[in-house]
Length: 582
Ligand code: ADP
Image (cartoon, rainbow, N blue to C red; front, top):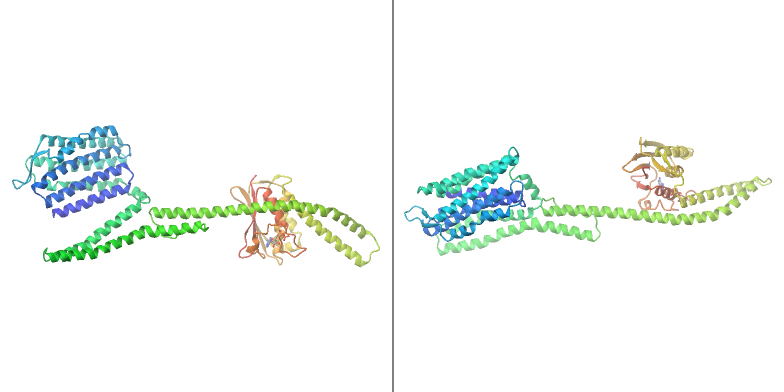
C-alpha cells in the first residue's frame, strides 16, 4: 500500500515537473522550479527505495547522507527560484556564492558520515545519534529555507493584488504547509525518539503539489498558454521523448509483466530463467520497431517531403509546395516557411518577367517609333505632291466618268496612307505634349461622343460604371482621348454585329483605373502577348495598321501609367488602363 502511494506521488511530481519545464523551457523561473520539483521526486525515490526494500544498517548511512544533501539542494533551488520569479531577473552571483559556500564543507561531511555517531536498526527500530555538525547542517538548511521564504514574502508584498502576487502567495503557502509537515516528521518526532513518521515524511509533499495544481489552474502559474506557444518551438524533442516514454511504459505493461509472470510463476529455477531470457529477446524487438516507426513518422517522412519540394524548386519549379499535413513542430514551421518562400519566389519571378516584357516592349516601341517617324517623313513629302496633283486633276474638266472615278479612288487611298503615316508619327511622339489637370471620366465621355458618330459603334450597348469623385490626374487630354477612342473602336471591330461594352472607372491606392470590357471575338492566348506590338494586326489588309494599341501603350507609359490586356475569358477582351494620381 505504502509503495503504491509512493509511486502515485512520484508520478504526480514527475508530471508536475515536466509540465513546468515544458511550459517554458527557456525561462529561468521554470527551469529552477522544475529543478526544485526534481529534487522532491528524488527525495521520494530514495525514501521509497530505502523504507520498502533496504531498511538495514548498511543502507541507513547512505539514506541519511542523501537525505541531508537533497534537503539542502532543494532549498538552493528554491532560493534561486525566489530570486528569478516572476520577472525572470538574473541570479545575484555574489550573494549566491556567499549563501551557498557552506555547502562546500557540509556536503562532503554528510557523505563521510561525520553527521552521526550511530545509525541503524540495532534495537529493531530505526535510530540515529547526530553530531553537532548535523545540527549545524540542519540549521543551515533552515536558514536557506527561511531566506528563500523571505525573498518570496518581499515579492508577495510588492506584487500584492496582482496575479503574480497570487502566484507567489500560492508558492509560499505550499512551502509553509510542506515545510511544517516535514519538520514535524523529520525533526520534531525523531527528536523525541519517535522515528515511525520518517517513512511517511515523503508523502507530506503531496499537499504542496495540490496547492501548486490549484495555483496552476486558477492563477495561471506556469501558464499553459506559454506552454502551447513553446510547443511550436521545441516539440520534436518532446515528441521523441514522449514516444520513447510511452513505448517504454507500454512494453513494460504488455510484455515485461506477463513475461515475468509466465517465466517465474513456478519458481526461480534454471528453466524459468531460460524461459524469461527467450521471451525477453523475442519481444524486445517489437518496441524497438514501434519506436523506429514513430521516429520515421515524426522526422524522416516530413523531412523527405521538404527535401523533394526543395529539389523541385532548384530545378525551376518555383511555387512548389510541401505536400504535408500541418504539424505543430519545427518541421511544420519549416514546411510552412518553405511554402511561403516558394510562393514569394514564384510571385517575384513572375513580376520580374512582366517588368522585363514591358521594358522590351517599350524599347522596341521606341526603336520602331524612330524608324516609323523617318519612314513617315519620307513618305509624306512625295505624298503631298501626289495629293495636290490629284486634287488639281479632279478639278479639271473634260475627264471621262471612268477617269473621274479612278481619281476618286486614288484620293481615298492617299487619305489612307496619310492616316497610316499620321499614326506612325504619333508612335514616335508619345511624350505628353500639353499637360493639364483633368477628370478621366470627362475624357472618356468625349471619346464616347466621338465614337458614336460611327455607325457600327451605334449598334453596341454601352454600360457605364464610372466611379464618382475620382482623384484628378495630370495628362495630355488629346492623347488620352486618342487612347480611349482607339480602345472603343477596337471593341467595335471585335463586335461587328453589336454586343455589350462595359466601361468602368475606379481608383486604387495610387492610380485611376479604367476598364473597357467587351464581349466580342476575344483574343487568343497565344496572341495576347503581341497585341501591343507595332504593326501587329489580325484585321484584313487595308482595315488595320496594327499601330493603334502600340500608340496607346506609348502614350499611357509616357504618362507613368500602364495598359494591359487583362482577361479574355470566356470571350471578349478587357483592357485596363491605369493612370497615376496627380
Ligand atoms: P489594329 O486595330 O489596327 O489591328 P491595334 O494595335 O489597335 O491595331 O490592335 C491590334 C490587334 O489587337 C487587333 O488586330 C486585334 O486582333 C486585337 N484587338 C485589339 N482590341 C481588341 C478587342 N477589343 N477584341 C479583340 N481583339 C482586339
